Image 1 (cartoon, helix red, strand yellow):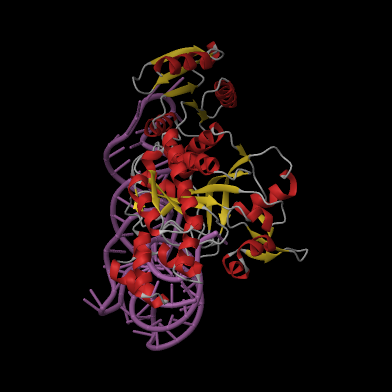
Image 2: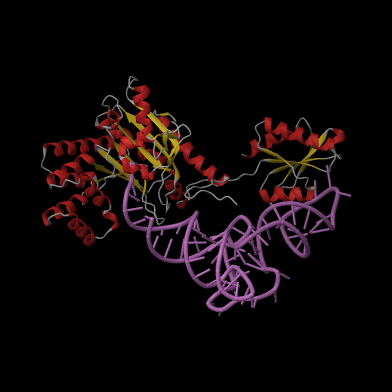
Length: 436
RNA sequence: GCCGGGGUGGUGUAGCCUGGUCAGCACAGGGGACUGUGGAUCCCCUAGCCCGGGUUCAAAUCCCGGCCCCGGCCCCA
């Protein structure tokens, strides 16, 4: 037997129902923020990703040669493709460009909790806004996106790559990325382990102390930003801190501040981020870390050959968000049952044709209706309808047909009505409406 | 790539340690009892030892390798 490919998933009708419910809500809030949906190809030239992240990234890509000998890769995220599209065709479009997407991504990694080789992200990109207004717009939408799914207990942790760079400079660390990785992992260790890891990294006691101070700058903005002001001295740092203050004021004005925290330990590891970065987390015992993240990437578009253009965005990890929503019972129940089940009685061809006529009239009227397709006997058919929770059964048979009628059975009350063939759809439609 | 725990009908499981009845049970699915009246009952049917090799008279069971799943590490653009 052929199995599913490792790290992939089959989505059942129940899965798709819930997923679509989530997508509908995200799409709705993205649209209200005036973002427009786009979609780019599932694969790109491998060079696109190589250019952004270096040669090593290829190991984590689904990379292959196509029949024309082109080196291509399935997209590991959407940001590169969006930046490419912008450079290709939209550099002269009115700014800002506001795009969103809901699409599958592919990464060749070991699957584990909340991590698959094919997964979906719903995200936005805001291109052309350099100011703190752009950061605020994106973070507000980030918060509103989770709220739109009904999630309440989550927080968006805001960090800043500029400050981390300044910090590295300040304590004389050259391997900025290495330091950021350590800082990023801070939550996975206790204090002693963290201190030890920093010493192993080669930091002096004084510097270790400073790093610990930095990672403790997390919490409500008003509480922790003053601490940051004390820790940093440089011009660049203090103007960046002012920017964070402004960001928080805009977030406050938009009514999302309740969910936003400062956490200068957020690094998001990746090289192309340049300013404000953020991640969303929700408490859970499922082993799920961040449920989405994003940040500012002001250099990527010029790296891809475009005019220098500032940009910021985020992506929500669908396979991480859905289990969280599930754990809080926020997802609706899936019920595949139709409203009506049309059952022909016996094998007579005239009866079958009448049944198809009836079910078709119901469907044309917008009613979700099934017709019995297996040749079940009436008893079994009613049994089936009962189990499935189907509210109405239409019995079509030679007993009523000569008078041009069928029997409509209300499965809950057991009441039955003889109704003309042409009137069935109207009759049932009326009853369904009055019940709801 | 590394470490740990697992893979028995569609689902959930018993059996494995201590090799040896036709691999048992429940649920789900289909049919019949009951040829136009329902969720009950009874009966029947469908359907399984992840793959490959080894040990043995005999392997679901023991051994080796692989694949996959769950979780962790690494990594996380």
